Amino acid sequence: MNKEEPPFPSTSDIARLVHHIQTEWHGLSRGLRQVAEAVSDVKLGDSGACSAPIYIARSEDLPRVQRIFEKSLSADQLNTLCLKVLPPDPARIDTHGLLFLPGRYVVPGGRFNEMYGWDSYFIALGLLRQGRVPMARAIADQCLYQVAHYGTVLTANRTYYLTRSHPPFLGRLVLAVYRATGDLTWLQRTLPLLEKFYYYWAVPPHLVSGMNLSRYYDFAQGPAPEVARGEMDEHGRNHYERLRMHLAEGGEYVQDASLFLDPETGALTPHAYHADRSMRESGFDVSGRFGFANLDVLDILPVCLNTLLWRLEVDIAKVRAFLGATSTLEVWNERARQRAESINEHLWDEETGMFFDYDGRAGRRRAYPFATTFWPLWAGLATEVQAARIVAHLPDFEASGGLLTSLHLSGCQWDRPFGWAPLNYMAVMGLHRYGYRHEARRIARRFVTLVTSEFCRTGQLYEKYDLEGMTSDVTGKIQFGYPTNEPGFGWTNACTLELLDYLGLLGDLDTEQTYTARIQLPPRTMQKPIV
Image (cartoon, rainbow, N blue to C red; front, top):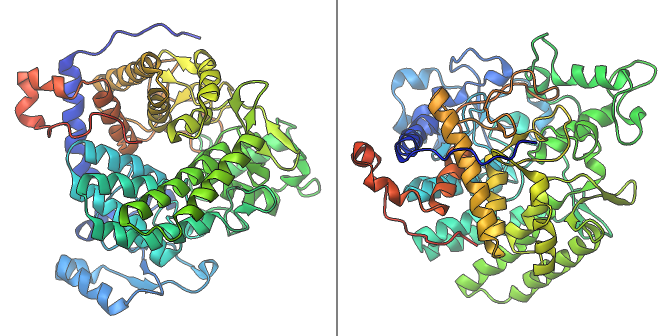
């Protein structure tokens, strides 16, 4: 594996990159005035015309929503609008469409033209870093609106995502916005929704009884529409067809193949479709981490999810402390203590010195080294001894372009040789938290170098990178999932800004006379990472 330190980009190149990110936020923003653009969904084959319905929650007031649109749109735009109220059962939706959100948000880019759950947390950090506090707060408000009216922070605001959520970063998002605004009245309004969101994850079927740990779980059955009609390869085969072919050929699968492929008909089973949907709630679509193409996900208690839920328990306690609402403070602290105990019992592997996911069906940890082993450092959950043992594995994950997602070459985008901005950012912050500053800066420099060099070559930032090949070109490298690399790209933009600031480079751009006037960076308000 090539781990040579690549040449660091020039100040001029970094300045151009930051200017591009700053100007790109506008193109990625959506709101009521951009409804025609927001409705378009290339994943379902839309041509771009504003023809699909916009659905509002049954708990909403349809006349109120209509008045909101009347204030924002012209008469011609209103004529193209088709508002519908969601049916009680999402399975009864015959024509999929956009879910109404009352404010502004930022989409990732490319084929992802909607507001995504965990993407939004990282995007908000980038906006806060550039002083765009109202926009970051608007993103938090849209997430809270989803909890209030759709039951959770959805994977994204399309009707086919109504049955699943996304990795739970909402507590982190709320506190990041509160630290930037100091608005206690706003924070007070978030508390009941934070707690409602928590209980989405902390009761069955997400909670696995007897383990005090949670799993990913989609409440719908059958093929996911965005997968069945998208994620095509060069031969016109979608992800499900590629799965079926691989299983029929006797390819790799972790447990019982008959769970996923009917031996008589050769078709994917209902369990396979349910598992595929559920692994998409994890955001890690697709990898080999939860079994072949993540199809064992319903049996897995993941490090990522339970670390985030521990952090959410701690953050709700923090919100209550800020508000002086201490009546149940000890309850939340005790929940966090119990979850930490369960994580250490079931997910910490003393022999290897890493956090692994727990396979409930097999009754053991799944030894699949993955970048989520650094998440307990990011969250502050790991002990000093655990942190030291995890850091000892850093050379295994490190490539020329930063931190690899896993050590396994599976043909999936969430595995080697690929790296993703959020995983690199979280690892850097985790290393920093535990005092491994040299290692944190090295990972940050490597990832920033790759992103900047590819930006100079292509004029774009992308959702993922080949960290070993030092390129954004993923052509022919992804076998399962969608085989493209999407430009834009919301969380890459944001995490790159965060890493540049961590390296102390945003302030240095003021010396670059060519771009200073156009960048207009705000003063650095946070000298330390948010913890």
